[in-house]
Length: 451
Image 1 (cartoon, rainbow, N blue to C red):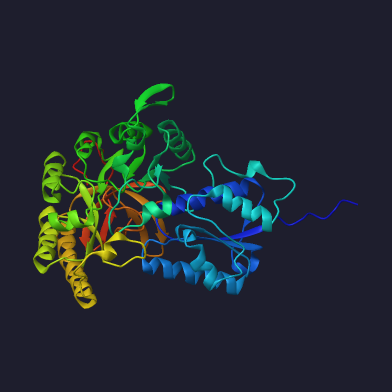
Image 2: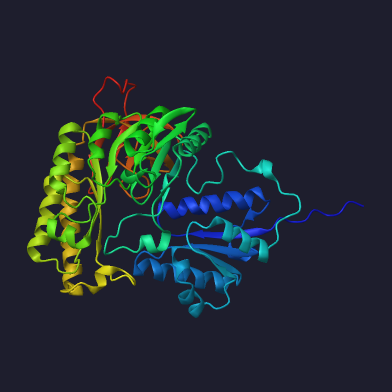
């Protein structure tokens, strides 16, 4: 008699933190799937659970520890990986029965732990893994990580101690992965790293090879290769180095988008110096003025920190003025958090908690006004929209000016399309963060003023 089929082992997975961690999760899941493991839909269906943690700020540490606790309570067999994994003593003090703990970007150690506690099937179904690997994003967009770690020593940050120093991926490998994703139907690639502008610095910008062609491993060289892909490419974590000016002529509505995610963190020179920010000598206002002169259609997203030790009221006012003068389109803001291990914790003159949070509220109210004004100016314009979702009320999508999950969206109230489709729309209304549009008559985006 034939033996009854053996159910494949089931692995639960929780991915926390930034897009770089999400890429790590995708790589782990791809390897597991290639070996015949399946992904469980719930803790109770899983033979074990992997938690990919974040440990960047205290709120992220708390979220990660809570996630581990929930998985331990509902399943009991948990492997911990990710940035918080470097603090194994902290995790084991709270949850001594976790099966294994690894640090970030350590796929081999995670796979070894899974093998030890849940042996892989004897007949792996390699053909079930698509060429682009397992993705945790919708089919039409994907994150593409170009490097690991960071070579800076910002006083508020512990990323180098969590993820190591900068290691740039070979340019040929990046382009090959991008091409596989495009062939699989991806319409938008989101480039992520700790410092995208620093790509190739660790390799002293040596010459790499893409399809047999010699190409310099540099930020401009990378962007030039990405322009060849024929899909939207969105650049995140772009530091304000001089090389940014070199890539501006390469940006295009139908290619590498005129959208830059630039983590300025502050605008006052003394605060930037105290933070030990790279490119701190380049005043943010001067950078933005030059960029907008070269690309008036440029959309800027940024993140800033308020209440850094020693920040005065006048310095905070400088930050408010910068956000308005620069016309920052999208903004994420945080009150300074004394992360364990950060050098900034030893700085004098800490800002009182009530002052930090009051400044944060003022900043976000200020940004809401700036955002509303900039969105208001888009009413009546046409734009190409990538549809993300269909709902009972219509379509939800984004133009080149909106990144998925972190920016606003465009509600398309009339017309029909599927997720992953591009449609041409006309903006008819706006609120503080989102836009409303109707599907416009067919037009050629190359000859019509678009946003």
